[in-house]
Amino acid sequence: MSGIASLSSSPISLRSRAAPAPRLRRFVISCRRTVRMSAAATTGSPALSFEGMAVKPPSHPTYDLEGVIKLALAEDAGDRGDVTCMATIPADMEVEAHFLAKEDGVVAGIALAEMVFHEVDPSLEVDWTKKDGDYIHKGLQFGRVSGRAYSVVVAERVVLNFMQRMSGIATLTKAMADAAHPARILETRKTAPVLRLVDKWAVLIGGGKNHRMGLFDMVMIKDNHISIAGGVTNAIRSVDTYLKQNNLQMEVEVETRTLEEVKEVLNYASETNTFLTRIMLDNMVVPLSNGDVDVSMLQEAVALINGKFDTEASGNVILETVHRIGQTGVTYISSGALTHSVKALDISLKIDTDLALEVGRRTKRA
Picture 1 (tube, rainbow, N blue to C red):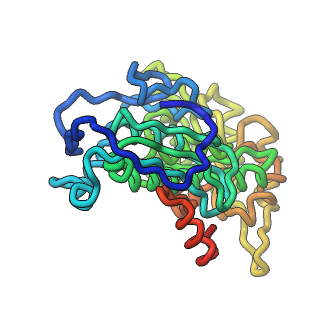
Picture 2 (picture 1 turned 30 degrees about the horizontal axis):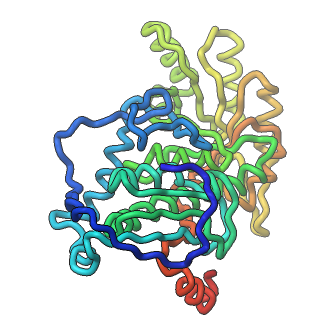
Picture 3 (picture 1 turned 30 degrees about the vertical axis):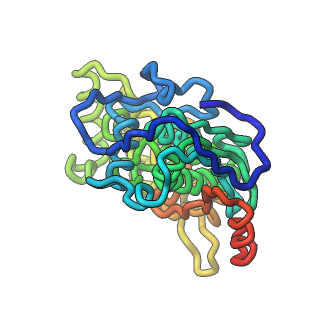
């Protein structure tokens, strides 16, 4: 796949070639070798190389990104494949299709789109004038794919589903990250099932920072752990013992819900050599009837901690409140809204771009 290149101004391109009809691929889950995808371990496949990516995906020891792509294609193809394409598109027809932004926002998923196209048909050629993390505006043509018409149309919806969701996440993340400064914005584990790495990749593209990837890479003592352990001190002590006995080194965060719990954590830490690295200040941002928020409790908690540990504000974090929260001195602000209720960014892939723009102008979408 090629890198950034200038795009053809031709709105529609159809061509035939005398090559043999491509074998129709059936995207089904099989016992073929799977490739585990992470930023730390990649394969030699051109479609799976992370070299040259504007933003590399986060690391995960077991996440199978190639498998997720195959699954997305398989659920679309079912047991027959694309019956409409097989009925209407000549096997030797070639086309050129253009990516069209129908909203302003931050584009994300370009690298993943190339992986999908390569999985469908390695002969497809993809060019972009933007990279992941760039701003796109309504009406902009920012990429194109050319090659077998059948392959382009089969890949279209899966590519757009990934790109639209990731771009929506990246767009909201960028807005919240800018507003939260100097605090850093984090997502949570409130991601779409099976799309954990994809969603968190989009957060990175938007300028955010990843919270823990899962249950395995950070100790996070939350309210239910505290209740079961019999209090916040017992919970932290148990974690310290476990990590020491198992010779583990990882970040440890504890959730606090009151100033009394903050003081209890600080008292324990002053008397014990603890693995604790971060204190979460949960729901210490109080919404007011006028739409504003009261951050005085959060400010008091930050002052009590006084830089001894990183701090993380959580609860009532939305775009309208994140700036106030970011001015309290917290290190991080986490928001589940980045991924659990994101609005997809409207992007289309069109062969006849002149007609697409005409329709877009009529509906005020381009």
